[in-house]
Picture 1: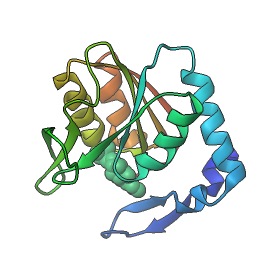
Picture 2: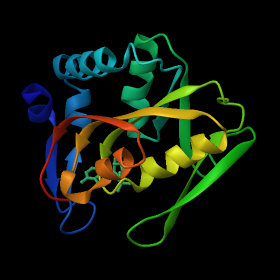
Picture 3: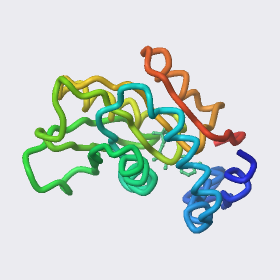
Amino acid sequence: MDKIKNAIRTIPDFPIEGIMFRDVTTLYSNPEAMKEVIDLTCDYWKNKGITCVAGIEARGFITGSIIANTLSLPFIPIRKKGKLPHDTLSQEYQLEYGTATIEIHTDAMNKNDNVLIVDDLIATGGTAVASIELIHKLDAKVSGCTFIIDLPELGGKKKIEDKGIEVQSLCDFEGH
Ligand code: AMP
């Protein structure tokens, strides 16, 4: 786990003052640390009946697609509004200032699916909870969520666990 945490770079005051931006590009460029991310994640979820992996744009696409391929499962993209070309369902959610919308293809999954949601980091949980709602709109079940980084002070992980959904995170950082 130290190998993973040490490979993540922190940029203070990005994109705005007061945010400690946890930059995973330095992790993605470190094959040894990335192997640990994929091994820890796939070992944890491999026998839990997952049928597909949904990655959240954009950083969730990188680990999400490797995890899906390693587990021999389909990869499903959850994208920002207006990017997916076929019929979509949308979910709006609250940001600190304003709102954002994410979308999924209507034929991406069905009621028989048990989905693993993947993103790089969980903060307030707004993005992940919106993703859960989107998947529920397709009548599929969310079996779990996995993140490389948790910011425990922001309470997102607890918000998801309170819904009865299992959450894995590989390292914690203090603050926002
Ligand atoms: P939230 O919806 O509040 O849980 O925020 C999660 C999303 O915002 C993830 O997709 C992260 O990539 C991004 N994010 C939030 N806070 C940070 C941070 N301190 N450093 C890097 N990314 C962040």
